[in-house]
Length: 305
Ligand SMILES: [Zn+2]
Image (cartoon, protein in one colour):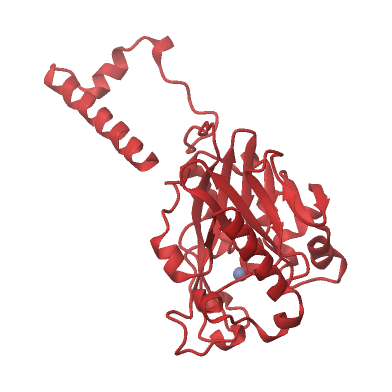
Protein backbone atom coordinates (compact mmCIF):
# COMPACT_ATOMS: atom_id res chain seq x y z
CA UNK A 1 0.00 0.00 0.00
CA UNK A 2 1.16 3.52 -0.73
CA UNK A 3 0.59 4.63 2.86
CA UNK A 4 2.67 1.74 4.17
CA UNK A 5 5.46 2.52 1.73
CA UNK A 6 5.52 6.18 2.73
CA UNK A 7 5.50 5.13 6.38
CA UNK A 8 8.49 2.87 5.77
CA UNK A 9 10.27 5.70 3.93
CA UNK A 10 9.76 8.06 6.84
CA UNK A 11 10.95 5.43 9.31
CA UNK A 12 14.08 4.90 7.18
CA UNK A 13 14.86 8.64 7.20
CA UNK A 14 14.40 8.72 10.98
CA UNK A 15 16.65 5.68 11.42
CA UNK A 16 19.35 7.26 9.26
CA UNK A 17 19.18 10.47 11.30
CA UNK A 18 19.47 8.45 14.52
CA UNK A 19 22.40 6.52 13.03
CA UNK A 20 24.15 9.76 12.01
CA UNK A 21 23.62 11.16 15.51
CA UNK A 22 24.95 7.98 17.16
CA UNK A 23 28.07 8.15 14.94
CA UNK A 24 28.82 11.57 16.42
CA UNK A 25 27.44 13.67 13.60
CA UNK A 26 24.04 15.19 12.97
CA UNK A 27 21.92 15.29 9.87
CA UNK A 28 22.61 19.05 9.54
CA UNK A 29 26.38 18.49 9.77
CA UNK A 30 26.18 15.69 7.24
CA UNK A 31 24.40 17.94 4.75
CA UNK A 32 26.96 20.72 5.20
CA UNK A 33 29.91 18.44 4.46
CA UNK A 34 28.29 16.64 1.52
CA UNK A 35 29.83 17.52 -1.86
CA UNK A 36 27.68 19.87 -3.98
CA UNK A 37 27.03 17.34 -6.79
CA UNK A 38 25.44 14.93 -4.30
CA UNK A 39 22.80 17.47 -3.20
CA UNK A 40 19.30 16.25 -4.05
CA UNK A 41 17.75 17.99 -7.04
CA UNK A 42 14.69 20.11 -6.29
CA UNK A 43 11.58 18.27 -7.44
CA UNK A 44 10.28 19.45 -10.81
CA UNK A 45 6.74 19.18 -9.41
CA UNK A 46 6.90 20.37 -5.81
CA UNK A 47 4.74 18.59 -3.21
CA UNK A 48 3.77 15.83 -5.61
CA UNK A 49 4.83 12.22 -5.10
CA UNK A 50 6.36 10.33 -8.06
CA UNK A 51 3.82 9.21 -10.69
CA UNK A 52 2.99 5.52 -10.13
CA UNK A 53 3.84 3.08 -12.94
CA UNK A 54 1.39 0.24 -13.47
CA UNK A 55 1.10 -2.87 -15.65
CA UNK A 56 -2.65 -3.35 -15.01
CA UNK A 57 -5.32 -0.74 -14.19
CA UNK A 58 -5.40 0.69 -10.72
CA UNK A 59 -8.56 2.34 -9.31
CA UNK A 60 -8.62 5.05 -6.65
CA UNK A 61 -11.75 6.08 -4.68
CA UNK A 62 -11.41 9.77 -3.86
CA UNK A 63 -13.26 11.82 -1.23
CA UNK A 64 -14.74 14.67 -3.27
CA UNK A 65 -17.02 16.17 -0.63
CA UNK A 66 -20.27 15.55 1.19
CA UNK A 67 -23.87 16.63 0.62
CA UNK A 68 -26.33 17.10 3.43
CA UNK A 69 -30.01 16.66 2.61
CA UNK A 70 -33.09 15.44 4.39
CA UNK A 71 -35.27 14.84 1.33
CA UNK A 72 -34.93 11.24 0.12
CA UNK A 73 -38.52 11.71 -1.13
CA UNK A 74 -36.92 13.22 -4.24
CA UNK A 75 -35.62 9.72 -4.99
CA UNK A 76 -38.84 7.87 -4.26
CA UNK A 77 -37.94 6.95 -0.68
CA UNK A 78 -39.23 8.02 2.72
CA UNK A 79 -36.95 9.14 5.54
CA UNK A 80 -37.71 5.92 7.40
CA UNK A 81 -36.61 3.85 4.44
CA UNK A 82 -33.08 5.21 4.06
CA UNK A 83 -30.30 4.45 6.50
CA UNK A 84 -28.75 7.89 5.87
CA UNK A 85 -30.25 10.65 3.76
CA UNK A 86 -26.91 12.47 3.35
CA UNK A 87 -24.54 11.63 0.52
CA UNK A 88 -20.81 11.37 0.13
CA UNK A 89 -19.50 12.68 -3.18
CA UNK A 90 -17.04 10.31 -4.82
CA UNK A 91 -14.54 10.86 -7.62
CA UNK A 92 -12.62 7.98 -9.16
CA UNK A 93 -9.24 7.84 -10.81
CA UNK A 94 -7.97 5.06 -13.04
CA UNK A 95 -4.28 4.71 -13.79
CA UNK A 96 -3.89 2.47 -16.84
CA UNK A 97 -0.58 1.59 -18.53
CA UNK A 98 -1.64 3.85 -21.44
CA UNK A 99 -2.82 6.88 -19.45
CA UNK A 100 -4.86 8.29 -16.63
CA UNK A 101 -8.65 8.74 -16.48
CA UNK A 102 -10.48 10.91 -13.95
CA UNK A 103 -14.18 10.07 -13.62
CA UNK A 104 -16.05 12.99 -12.03
CA UNK A 105 -14.59 16.04 -10.29
CA UNK A 106 -16.86 16.36 -7.23
CA UNK A 107 -17.67 19.50 -5.30
CA UNK A 108 -15.53 22.55 -5.99
CA UNK A 109 -12.19 22.86 -4.17
CA UNK A 110 -13.22 26.47 -3.43
CA UNK A 111 -15.60 25.06 -0.79
CA UNK A 112 -12.84 23.49 1.29
CA UNK A 113 -13.25 24.55 4.91
CA UNK A 114 -16.37 26.62 4.31
CA UNK A 115 -19.56 26.01 6.32
CA UNK A 116 -22.36 24.13 4.57
CA UNK A 117 -24.89 26.97 4.84
CA UNK A 118 -22.75 29.35 2.77
CA UNK A 119 -23.13 27.34 -0.42
CA UNK A 120 -26.30 25.32 -0.07
CA UNK A 121 -27.94 24.56 -3.40
CA UNK A 122 -31.69 23.78 -3.56
CA UNK A 123 -31.51 22.76 0.10
CA UNK A 124 -28.38 20.66 -0.39
CA UNK A 125 -25.58 21.62 1.99
CA UNK A 126 -22.11 21.22 0.49
CA UNK A 127 -19.23 20.19 2.73
CA UNK A 128 -15.70 19.79 1.49
CA UNK A 129 -12.80 18.81 3.75
CA UNK A 130 -10.09 17.95 1.22
CA UNK A 131 -9.21 19.40 -2.17
CA UNK A 132 -9.20 17.22 -5.27
CA UNK A 133 -5.90 18.84 -6.26
CA UNK A 134 -4.39 17.70 -2.94
CA UNK A 135 -5.89 14.21 -3.22
CA UNK A 136 -4.32 13.85 -6.68
CA UNK A 137 -0.98 15.13 -5.39
CA UNK A 138 -1.04 12.42 -2.71
CA UNK A 139 -1.33 9.86 -5.50
CA UNK A 140 1.47 11.48 -7.48
CA UNK A 141 -0.51 13.44 -10.02
CA UNK A 142 -0.88 17.05 -11.04
CA UNK A 143 -4.01 18.07 -12.98
CA UNK A 144 -1.93 18.16 -16.20
CA UNK A 145 -1.16 14.43 -15.75
CA UNK A 146 -4.80 13.51 -16.34
CA UNK A 147 -5.00 12.15 -19.89
CA UNK A 148 -8.78 11.83 -20.02
CA UNK A 149 -11.58 13.50 -18.13
CA UNK A 150 -14.99 11.81 -18.06
CA UNK A 151 -18.03 13.09 -16.18
CA UNK A 152 -20.87 10.79 -15.20
CA UNK A 153 -23.05 13.81 -16.04
CA UNK A 154 -23.13 17.59 -15.79
CA UNK A 155 -24.68 18.17 -12.36
CA UNK A 156 -22.98 20.44 -9.83
CA UNK A 157 -21.68 17.71 -7.51
CA UNK A 158 -19.83 16.04 -10.40
CA UNK A 159 -18.38 19.02 -12.26
CA UNK A 160 -17.16 21.24 -9.40
CA UNK A 161 -13.51 21.14 -10.49
CA UNK A 162 -13.95 20.40 -14.18
CA UNK A 163 -12.21 23.62 -15.27
CA UNK A 164 -9.02 22.33 -13.65
CA UNK A 165 -8.88 19.59 -16.30
CA UNK A 166 -9.51 21.64 -19.43
CA UNK A 167 -6.06 20.54 -20.66
CA UNK A 168 -7.14 16.87 -20.66
CA UNK A 169 -9.12 15.18 -23.42
CA UNK A 170 -12.78 15.25 -22.42
CA UNK A 171 -14.68 12.02 -23.12
CA UNK A 172 -18.34 12.89 -23.39
CA UNK A 173 -21.52 11.41 -24.82
CA UNK A 174 -22.90 13.74 -27.47
CA UNK A 175 -26.21 14.00 -25.58
CA UNK A 176 -24.54 15.20 -22.36
CA UNK A 177 -22.39 17.68 -24.25
CA UNK A 178 -25.58 19.11 -25.79
CA UNK A 179 -27.23 19.26 -22.38
CA UNK A 180 -24.27 21.05 -20.80
CA UNK A 181 -23.48 23.51 -23.58
CA UNK A 182 -26.19 23.75 -26.20
CA UNK A 183 -29.48 23.81 -24.30
CA UNK A 184 -28.92 27.08 -22.46
CA UNK A 185 -26.83 27.85 -19.40
CA UNK A 186 -27.10 25.56 -16.38
CA UNK A 187 -26.40 26.98 -12.94
CA UNK A 188 -23.12 25.05 -12.68
CA UNK A 189 -21.85 26.21 -16.10
CA UNK A 190 -19.17 28.38 -14.48
CA UNK A 191 -17.63 25.23 -12.95
CA UNK A 192 -17.10 23.55 -16.33
CA UNK A 193 -17.15 26.40 -18.87
CA UNK A 194 -13.43 25.90 -19.72
CA UNK A 195 -14.26 22.46 -21.16
CA UNK A 196 -15.73 24.23 -24.17
CA UNK A 197 -12.14 24.67 -25.33
CA UNK A 198 -10.89 21.17 -24.40
CA UNK A 199 -9.88 18.47 -26.83
CA UNK A 200 -12.99 16.29 -26.97
CA UNK A 201 -14.01 12.81 -27.99
CA UNK A 202 -17.78 12.82 -28.55
CA UNK A 203 -19.68 9.55 -28.93
CA UNK A 204 -23.04 7.82 -28.76
CA UNK A 205 -23.32 4.59 -26.78
CA UNK A 206 -20.36 3.05 -24.91
CA UNK A 207 -16.75 4.21 -25.19
CA UNK A 208 -13.73 1.94 -24.66
CA UNK A 209 -11.26 4.42 -23.12
CA UNK A 210 -7.93 2.66 -23.77
CA UNK A 211 -9.09 0.29 -26.52
CA UNK A 212 -8.41 -2.94 -24.59
CA UNK A 213 -11.78 -3.53 -22.89
CA UNK A 214 -10.50 -2.85 -19.36
CA UNK A 215 -11.97 0.64 -18.92
CA UNK A 216 -15.33 1.28 -20.60
CA UNK A 217 -17.69 4.22 -20.24
CA UNK A 218 -21.19 2.71 -20.34
CA UNK A 219 -24.11 4.69 -21.70
CA UNK A 220 -26.75 4.81 -18.94
CA UNK A 221 -29.10 7.68 -19.88
CA UNK A 222 -32.06 8.63 -17.70
CA UNK A 223 -30.84 10.78 -14.81
CA UNK A 224 -29.60 13.09 -17.58
CA UNK A 225 -29.75 12.53 -21.36
CA UNK A 226 -26.09 11.50 -21.64
CA UNK A 227 -25.43 10.03 -18.21
CA UNK A 228 -22.60 7.45 -18.28
CA UNK A 229 -21.32 4.86 -15.81
CA UNK A 230 -17.81 3.41 -15.76
CA UNK A 231 -16.70 -0.21 -15.93
CA UNK A 232 -13.16 -1.07 -14.82
CA UNK A 233 -11.72 -4.57 -15.09
CA UNK A 234 -9.18 -4.98 -12.29
CA UNK A 235 -6.65 -7.84 -12.19
CA UNK A 236 -7.28 -8.83 -8.55
CA UNK A 237 -10.57 -7.18 -7.56
CA UNK A 238 -12.34 -8.20 -10.76
CA UNK A 239 -14.94 -6.11 -12.58
CA UNK A 240 -16.19 -2.95 -10.89
CA UNK A 241 -18.98 -0.70 -12.16
CA UNK A 242 -19.16 2.88 -10.90
CA UNK A 243 -22.81 3.75 -11.35
CA UNK A 244 -22.63 7.55 -11.25
CA UNK A 245 -26.12 8.83 -10.41
CA UNK A 246 -27.97 5.89 -11.91
CA UNK A 247 -28.51 5.19 -8.22
CA UNK A 248 -28.03 7.60 -5.30
CA UNK A 249 -29.20 5.60 -2.29
CA UNK A 250 -28.56 1.88 -1.99
CA UNK A 251 -32.27 1.57 -1.13
CA UNK A 252 -33.10 2.65 -4.71
CA UNK A 253 -31.49 -0.61 -5.78
CA UNK A 254 -32.92 -2.85 -3.08
CA UNK A 255 -36.44 -1.34 -3.20
CA UNK A 256 -36.53 -0.45 -6.91
CA UNK A 257 -37.10 3.27 -6.43
CA UNK A 258 -36.07 6.31 -8.42
CA UNK A 259 -37.01 9.96 -8.91
CA UNK A 260 -40.53 10.00 -10.36
CA UNK A 261 -39.52 11.86 -13.51
CA UNK A 262 -36.86 9.22 -14.28
CA UNK A 263 -39.46 6.44 -14.61
CA UNK A 264 -40.01 7.65 -18.16
CA UNK A 265 -36.62 9.15 -19.06
CA UNK A 266 -34.63 5.94 -19.55
CA UNK A 267 -33.44 5.09 -16.03
CA UNK A 268 -35.34 1.75 -15.72
CA UNK A 269 -33.92 0.56 -19.06
CA UNK A 270 -30.39 1.75 -18.16
CA UNK A 271 -30.57 0.02 -14.78
CA UNK A 272 -31.68 -3.25 -16.38
CA UNK A 273 -28.97 -3.10 -19.06
CA UNK A 274 -26.26 -2.31 -16.51
CA UNK A 275 -27.45 -5.10 -14.19
CA UNK A 276 -27.25 -7.54 -17.14
CA UNK A 277 -23.75 -6.31 -17.97
CA UNK A 278 -22.72 -6.66 -14.31
CA UNK A 279 -24.03 -10.25 -14.22
CA UNK A 280 -22.28 -11.14 -17.50
CA UNK A 281 -18.95 -9.69 -16.34
CA UNK A 282 -19.33 -10.78 -12.67
CA UNK A 283 -18.85 -7.14 -11.65
CA UNK A 284 -19.57 -5.35 -8.40
CA UNK A 285 -21.78 -2.26 -8.54
CA UNK A 286 -20.43 0.68 -6.56
CA UNK A 287 -22.79 3.53 -5.70
CA UNK A 288 -20.69 6.64 -5.17
CA UNK A 289 -23.36 8.57 -3.23
CA UNK A 290 -24.02 5.69 -0.81
CA UNK A 291 -22.77 6.36 2.70
CA UNK A 292 -22.38 2.61 3.37
CA UNK A 293 -20.30 2.17 0.21
CA UNK A 294 -18.07 5.15 0.87
CA UNK A 295 -17.54 4.41 4.55
CA UNK A 296 -16.30 0.91 3.74
CA UNK A 297 -14.36 1.74 0.57
CA UNK A 298 -10.58 1.63 0.52
CA UNK A 299 -9.92 5.31 -0.06
CA UNK A 300 -7.18 7.12 -1.94
CA UNK A 301 -4.16 7.20 -1.77
CA UNK A 302 -4.71 3.46 -1.25
CA UNK A 303 -6.11 1.75 -4.34
CA UNK A 304 -7.81 -1.26 -5.85
CA UNK A 305 -6.08 -3.31 -8.53
ZN1 LIG B 1 -24.73 13.30 -7.87
